[in-house]
Image (tube, rainbow, N blue to C red; front, side):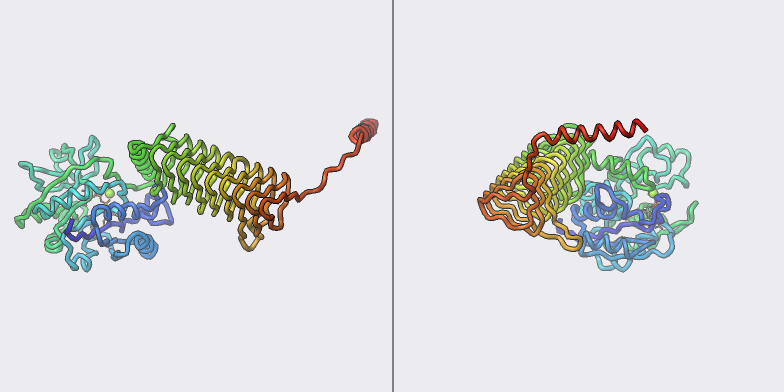
Length: 452
Ligand code: UD1
Ligand code: MG
């Protein structure tokens, strides 16, 4: 769309029901703040500038907003005098002159780009005000959308509605599109003659009509318009977001054996024919290529997994893990900041951090990279085709040349040349019959104790 678009995000509410030291819009769903969700959705709908209306902790909110958009203005609403008053806190930004204005709620993160685009299309086709509505069996508390002959004539707040108006099930979702060049004129005409004595944004409908302008209501799904007021609602929206994203991934060709038990991050990417087993948790920054398998109870964050890899069950992949084609990371293995090259295997009970594991290397059970000296992190470089015997400690910095063998139980403190065998443990000693001696001695000690 060639039209310019400003998004005004209302976020000045106290959010007191969250009972939190964190502003409401900074609480997260799928690892992304509510504000972040709203900004990203607005951007997907072509919103190229944002004004965030704040009341408390402006600096924290600003920092979050800036991390998602280069074009944000933070506007302080000093007193909470209503939603129209809140929008007018963004007057200086509105005055810059945008074609479209979208008014969004900072605490309603499930809104979809397509619904916003429908509002914008209505503006493009000549409406000055477009309101997103939804139909619900529980309209209590919402503003009602009053229509006549297919036109939206007013929004009546619950508290101000007549008994007849309260029967209306078409409700205001709180999200609106406004024609950017007319908006200030209309907003300035809104008064506060109502039961709450507030400047209601919803009155813009009647004001616009009185000024001969066109107003439409556009219906969206109720689920997109739910907001967060307390932690319970936060969890419900999280749930909803998760289900929606899992459904999308499955429709795009990802297999999930028990989808309800898979937790995704806002940015999780999974390719076709990947298989996600039950109880897998994705933290931020995970990319799974096609036909990879993430087995049950694995926890991944900041990890890139190539095609054909098998991860888990019970694997923990931490940030900076990069697993190349066909490699395997098995049960009770932890990796961090590690490149695992094609076909390598780290199958059991290992910690591999700050390392490279060369192609087709085999890391035995219980291998630990000792990467931390208490102050600094050091690198372990394991060449292609290396075989590390079980229960080995690799004390970094250390380099194991291609094709080397490491004997089980070794503590490797020096570099190992390519194709060498390194064994770094005490030699085995055999003392014939000594076990019998020990047994007899121990029995004697026990017998003496019992006599006493
Ligand atoms: C509002 C709508 C109502 C709609 C409902 C949908 C109005 C007058 N009413 O009612 O028709 O059905 O949303 O959820 O708009 N805010 C500010 N500053 C203020 C007042 C509000 O920033 O001075 C922010 C709040 O933080 C919140 C949003 O605006 O994010 C909506 O305000 P809220 O008080 O929740 O309005 P509702 O009574 O829910
Ligand atoms: Mg509300």
